[in-house]
Length: 167
Image 1 (cartoon, rainbow, N blue to C red):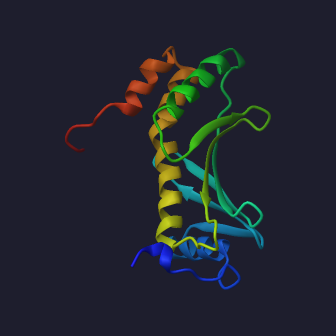
Image 2 (cartoon, rainbow, N blue to C red):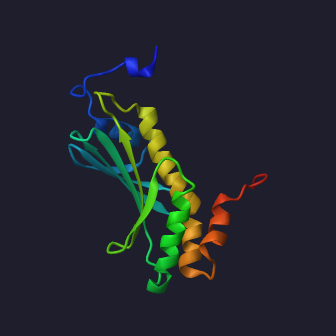
Image 3 (cartoon, rainbow, N blue to C red):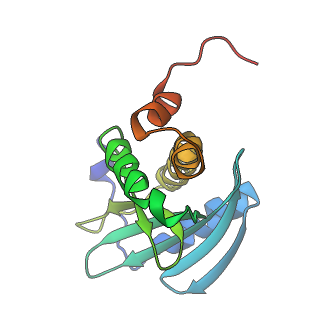
């Protein structure tokens, strides 16, 4: 039977409750900011990432925002924006943007749960893991463009290059 054949009324389980259960399972630091919002910190290889997940019942979307500090020199911002555009052409399940005023690189993704569908813990876990993986994958590229003498295409080659073997 298809997964979409198994619906639980949206009043029975709240999407943020599922997110909280996943965070608890992984022992991630989190704070339930409101009934419809949770914030957490997930450690990556390069840095810690701040994640906020919010549920919008009107749009029926579970929105994930994953951020990390990025404050490149102002003259590097055009190259950062070019890098973001190139990165977004390579990803399928979200997108990056840069919030200048907050000096944050942002990964955004929305899981549509229309028709009283609910998010499964595995889906939420995968959303979070994909967000952190995208930030980890492209963090070095943003660093090289922002503080090095590397252009966007060359910096992206590092993130997109295939690794052979293992350390």
